[in-house]
Length: 167
Image (cartoon, rainbow, N blue to C red):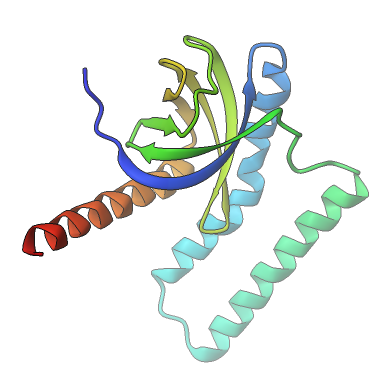
C-alpha cells in the first residue's frame, strides 16, 4: 500500500520504547495536565467574552500555567525525559511520518515528542522501514492538533501544485 505523504519540516525527539516503556507511558499520560490548559483555551475561544472577562481569563490561564511549572520545579520533576535521538520528518500523513534520514529499525516501537504551535505532542509509533513510521498511540487532543497540521500541509501542497500548473 502506497502512503501519500505531504511535505513538511518537523523536528522529533524519539527513542526505542521497549526498555523504558513504563517511564515513557508515565510521561505520555501526565503530559495531559499541561495540555489541559490548551483545552481550556480552545473551549474559551468558542465563547464570546467581554474585554474585561477576556483579560481575567487570560490572567487565570497564565497563573495556572505558572503554578503548574512552579509545582514541577518544587518537586524537581522534569516535565519531559531526555530522549536519545533527534531527526526531521519531511513527510506527514494522518497516521504516518516519513523521516528525512534512515534512522529507524524496522518493526521497532518508539516513543516520540514534537512541538506544534507551542503544544508538545507525545506519540508512540512503529517503524515500517528505516525512515517511515505508523503512529500507534496519540491522545485525542494531540491528534486533533496533528490532523490540523497535516491538513494544512496538504492544502499548502495543493496550492503549490496549482500555482505550478498555472505557471
